[in-house]
Image (cartoon, rainbow, N blue to C red; front, side, top):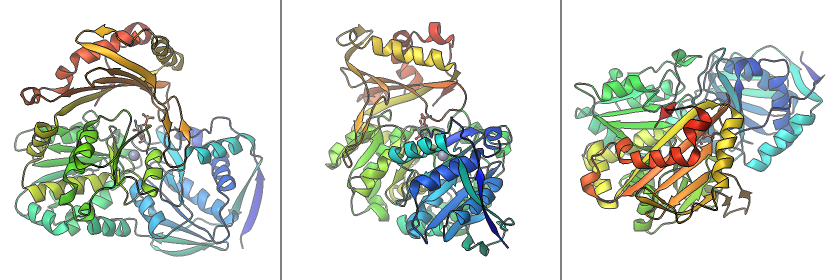
Length: 544
Ligand code: G1P
Ligand code: ZN
């Protein structure tokens, strides 16, 4: 016997989704009705038709299983006909996007706080993806927020928990729950895009790889793809068992947080190739032996070499990058004669361009790269793309990158993050910068001259929607830039991101460390923002 309950609740006023869904600390989500309110607000705003199917899964972080059981019972009470979920409640974000598209569901709910730490005191998150497999656009997330502010009831079925550990078909009330293998459909999609035979040959020929899943969701995906399908030795994997607290780590694949992998790739007898992905499997970091590929360069290099990959051999419609991402991809697009779009930060802006068939590849400086095969960024996809290129060119990661710079010039790039700054201090920095807009153009700062500055705004070329306040840009006459932006995903105070980019066509400088090559711009950024005086910070928290 199951009973549908309509329970009384009162609103929380902080359920505004950020760059990628609602993210809060686990204890916030554990408050009575907190998750329920937000889920009901999603269901009320999306108004699924009768008979709708939903994809549901998460990155395995603490509270994932409890949340899935609650959402299943709420979906049943709200009239869904079927929910597809991964065994153990596991679905990487790209795999969820793949399932939504493949089975044409009415979107999906993804439980993740991406690269943020997990565990009982860590972060949790929830977001709704629409039927195209991508994060809901702002007009939907705003509607969800509005409803969350006036919610008075939610619906839930009283039923026992679903045995998520066992693949099979279950029912809750009248709703079917299919617990499926979280990896199979995704692995099949990867095999359809890349030359697995060539990659298998590369690996069999002694090319050593090391993949670090950072104790997060991609462990089982990496095992199936690299070991079972591509024949890599088991020693190629590290940290591939997903843990609710990510082994107490920070599952963000960059030089700071993936240092275990970085030390191996920069050590003696280093493997030829290293890669890592984040909590929910959508980010990637690519390393060669003693070599790091900046994500902005990675997007440009994938674009330039796409013809070597079966899934992209027919050509690219266009490429898109987020505004703070370097303009390296723009140079490739120009040579290929394809359009290049500059969007605000966050993956949701790429979705419209892909749905309208305007772009095939896209990426962000924040270790996110992807293509129109799904509507999320995709960590393992990027790793496979690189391996496919390496196999086809029979060159090292470093040689491929240096040849790219020699041909297109190098967009030297770095991002400096200042985390957990008091919100009013961070806002003060941004206001101060905006106040200096009028006086900056034409000013000479060291060897750079300011051409113009603005607060980036974007008009979506597909639906005409306008997004303002997307980051302050100081553009210099030689194409170099400094961008200041406040993070939309942090959960503590504010995070100020400073993005630095200098274009250098001279091959004689291409050996320089990015921090050295950018030192003058770093100094200028500090002066313009009155950084030390205002924040008392003398060093960034993270440099990528
Ligand atoms: C960060 C990244 C952004 C990415 C987002 C979700 O957002 O900068 O590129 O899309 O995480 O992974 P931010 O904290 O800067 O708002
Ligand atoms: Zn992520």
